[in-house]
Length: 188
Image (cartoon, rainbow, N blue to C red; front, side, top):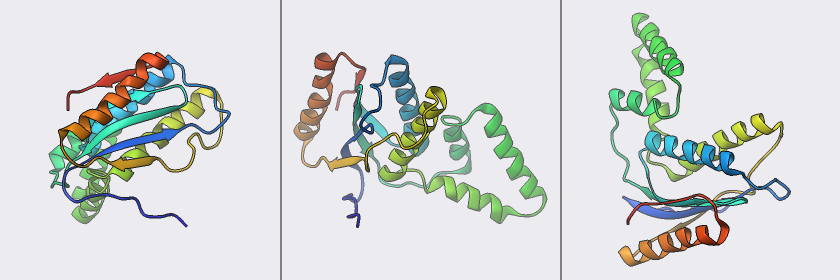
């Protein structure tokens, strides 16, 4: 039986990591860039902040700030949708809302908006979306089938002062020169 993920109230920082399933070929530069692109798109959609990250051949590390949940207006939901959906998909969703509203079904519009809002400001939802989207892209482009990631992602709450954040960020960044893989840093 799974144990519950440790989270904290309010704004929190997490060191998150996940490994590819054994036997999966190492990620190449194009695949790492696609992972980065998906990670950044969902960062915007979910309202989180990637402080630093490193995508290696067989796994990734992310230092992630998860703000306290906030109210998100319909206009903001639409802006955030543009980070993960194509313009055609956004137009289609807006057209559907317009149709529901013309049919006096505002309740259905609000249910759809609430469904999107529930995915925001949530570590588990963010990681599920990133890993799922990348897995689908990876399997489609490589002709592979099945799960891509081992187990659940691992997360460690980074508590304390700025020194703790800086230490974890330095650890994540330090992996890059050894491996020669993509990394980005944002001052903490």
